[in-house]
Image (cartoon, rainbow, N blue to C red; front, side, top):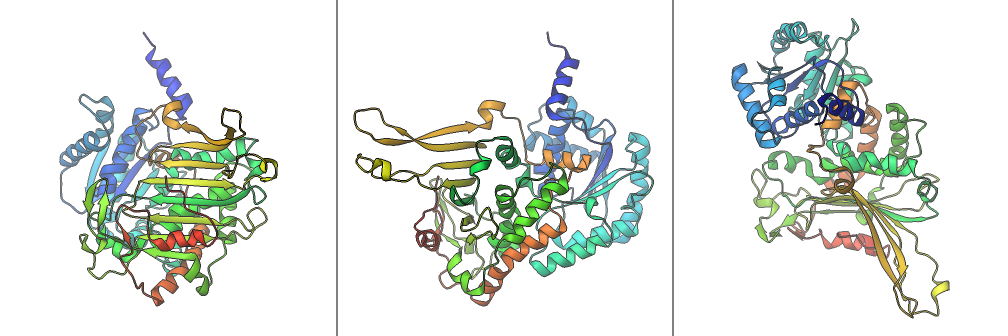
Length: 511
C-alpha cells in the first residue's frame, strides 16, 4: 500500500509549492466564467495541494442569496464543470472556505461593506490581508471597480501584505480606450499589482514554446530567416457566437482575438532568448517583437488583410445558421467573424519572413496551432531521380484541442528507385504525461497567487498590440464590406484568405 504522505510529496515535487495565503474575491461570481472556469480551476488546484490551507473564496454579485445558497450553487458547478463526484473531500474543504457577498459594483458603499467581511476572513482563515481580486465583470466596469477598490483602501499594500487585480480581456476596444483604461487603473495600482489574463497562455503547449525553443540545441540555431520560409498561426473555432452576440457584434474577430491571443502566440514564437524566465525579462523580449511588427499602411490593408462573415452552412454534419440570424446580432451586421493578416517583423532574425495569422468562427475544424515551414532543400541533388517535388520540413505546435508537437521530414521510400515520402513524428502531451483535468486557468490563477506575472501582459504590451491592429480597424471602418456573408459555416473561411497566400505562392495548412 502506498504512503499517502509520500504521494502528497510527489505531487508537490511535480507541481510546485502551495500558493501564498490569500483571500480570492471574484466580482461577477454568478457569471458563466466563474462557473465554468474559475471555480473548477480552484478545485483542480486544491486537488494537487497547490492552494494553501490559509485560503478563502469570496463570491461577489448583485443577486441576493444566502451563503448556504451560494455554496450549494458552487457545489453544483464543481459537479457539472469540474468533474467532482460524491463524496468529495476536496469540495468540502473548498466550500468551508467559500463566502458570498451581495452588492452593486458601481456603488461605493459596496466596497466599504466588503472591507469588514474580508477582515473577518483574515482572522478566521489567517489569509494575512492578501487579496486577489478577479474582475469577471463587464469590461465597462473594469476601471470603475479598480477606482472603488482604491478609494476604500482595499488596494493598499502597506503593512507587508499584497493586493492584486486580475482583469479579463478585452482590455479596451481600440488603442485609445486601452490607453485610457491603463491610465485609470494606473492611478490606483502599480504595474506589479495588475494581472491582465489571457487564458490561451494557460495552455501547456503555449508555455512549452519557450522551453521547446530555448532548451533544445537543435532548433534555436535554425529559428531564423535563413532557414524558415514563413510562419502560420491559426485559431479556428467550429462554434458560432452562441449567446455572446451582443458583445461580439460590437467587437468582431479582429478585436476579440488578434491583440491578445494571437499576438501573444506571435511574440512567443518570434522573441529573442530572454536573460532569464523572470516576468519582466520574458515580457521585455515580447514587447520588442510587438514594436517590431510593421503596422499596415492604409493601402496595404487592402492586400494584406482579409475579413469575412459566415453564412449558412454545415458544422459537424449539422445545419449551421448564418451569423446575421444568431441571437442578439443585427440582421444587417457588418461585423467580421473571420480575419486573416500578413504581418512582417522588422528585425534581424525575421526580415523577409512573413507571419500569416487567421482566426474565425464556424470554421471547418476546431484547432489552434503554430506552423513553422522551413525553406525547401535544393533540387540539384535529385535532378536525375523520380523526385518531382520536395516537401519542405514543417514543425507544428498544436495548442488545442490535442496539445502536442509534430515534425514533418523526408525519408526514402523503400524500393529500387530514389523516391521520397513525407514522414511525421508526433508528440502528444496526453501520451507522455497523461491528461489531467484542466480549464487552462489553473496555472494562471496559481501564478497570480504567487506573484509570477510572466504569462500576463504589461501595459506597454497591451498598447503595442492595439497599435498593430488599429490601422486595419480604421480602414475597415471607413470602407464597409461589400460581400458579407462571404464564407459558408463549416468551411476554412473566405476565398480572399486563400488569395492572400496564393499571391505569395503559398497556401494555408488546413488540418
